[in-house]
Length: 147
Image (cartoon, rainbow, N blue to C red; front, side):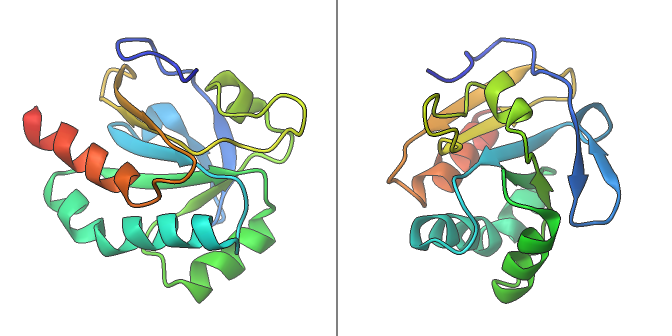
């Protein structure tokens, strides 16, 4: 189960491919999406869908950030290879993943969950689907257009 719409988004600070620490409170409103692993087919497809929809997201005044347990080094290679126009955040211990109920308990791999967080740090929308890679972007765009 993902965190519920209306819940307060847990604050966090993680290393970013921007070479600066990312603090959620300094970057809202935004979309954060959790994904299992860099360079896997599904995660690549999902990241590229956010890349391809990036202009539309920016036109809706929203930034997007991807989070997995991979290292910053891996994230930078993944970002460069796929020409991602947004930053990726590294959660090596899975603590942020866990706080967003985005960690599979036994194997400790991030689930595929996307959150829309408003300027008050409130969760406005959630989409969770391990295999609907492009649906994460579509769901967030639909929610942003409703507001």
